Length: 509
Image (spheres, rainbow, N blue to C red):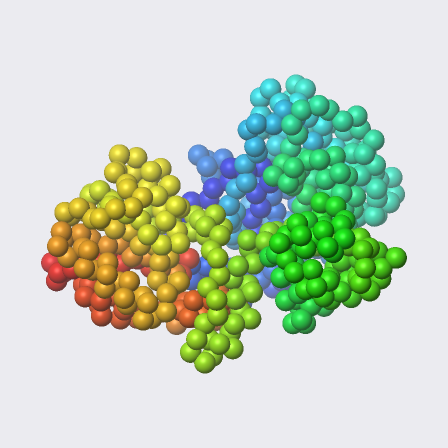
């Protein structure tokens, strides 16, 4: 199965190295299936940051930390020239911002490959401070230090990894520089919490603050245990509603009383108090000692579980990301052939998701005619990819198809019931027939030939509850297309459980 070449532009990209499980003579790689990897029978996979990647020579350099009991560490000590190495990834690359004046960087041994590579690729003319926490002076490495950058080695001096405060102490003690800053830290999750909190208090904006827990001490904090327990339905829904309505984001900025909170967010005060009580009971929120029952005017703030969530699980606190999660509450209606209120679609999130699939869509078609319009959830991502890969192709964001023109419909039908999808396709066919326009239709699919995949199953249920559609299989999409009067001239697998069809209003040649 053809897959894209390895790409590694970001200094903190990570890929998975598949290593033998205990007792295995050789690692068993995951199985490549259409759209993703099947890990069900694979050996252990460990995350590593490439220290160097040279696409011209195909040389990939990884650093391994030697420690007792680690599967990857054990494998690395016994590997020899000629042994096969299976890797997966990197999935994507996050690049440094270009408009900052200095960088503040730090981490422990697990962050050293990323930090070493960043120092090699440090942006010209940008100053910075780099802190590296290690066991003792013997662990220091010879790393390049660009002009204007200070590298400081911090020694734990006998304190176990993940239990030292030397990194946090150094960050808080350093003189703060003027100018826009980008902060990047990685290491043990719990030891990074004070650093994240301090940098937020210093006013570092969220898009210039990256703090990643690369690993976690074996003991579990009470707050994390409580967060895991929120899988019970009522607290989980209450938490997601609080995220979607902006309650968590508002209280992360500053504590406030329920009346002000309700007014700021345009919500019902009585309902806000009830929601707050449910989340206080789970330590997501904390009530004022003067008003423990949230009855009067005491301040609400984030509780210990809320602190863990905003500091270590920040990606789930984006209100926009909840638009499909909460639709599952309408699954009862879906079981009776109905669907709940259609969620408001955050276009930027859809575009971000679609960006994974659109390069394949663009690369797998010949673009010989002007594109009259691009429709569907992925339209902005498709338009951007067309402008990038086919720069001289005329692309209109909307409009009627001209003679021999093309309409691209990407992730379009999944937001329609079958009846709605058929009506939309019939309307599109009526527009295309007089001028002989072509339609390129691309849809995410439910694969009927492989084991159920957790992400696909979740998306299928979400789409069913939200729109009455679900993920359709290829046969179901083609049945709708032909019922609308289109003829299918070509089919193309795009990967990521996605297929495209080229449709015409006449018989295929």
